[in-house]
Image (cartoon, rainbow, N blue to C red):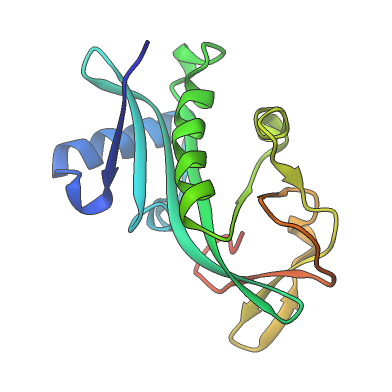
Length: 174
């Protein structure tokens, strides 16, 4: 079985951070922006290695979500990626399982935004596609994000009404 290293961003040395960023750039075919990388920093990283190189990665960072009158501490899953040559070998599930363990034990809920290609991974693991509207607490106030409807998944969320609102950040807010 491929080992998974769990490390805080602070525990990744310069070379390891560069190797993970390189994996993400490769896995996302050059579409992984600096803001996306920034979103993945500051929490925990789950990295699968083969022959000393990272082949899969997921991160969990803390965010605040609003749902109705509740403020929820969220373990937000970021930067889930598998090396293109190692896809369909269970590595995505391996790093996601490690991330879920932290989400389930340390946060009110988990959330993530997935591409259509990623939907199957999360639904088979018990994540639920959020069927309500999404929004962001922007500098100008709560703003609906219809472009993100149908891509946000949650884990451990029960009940609630109205939009699911995320905190503001540069780049993609979800």
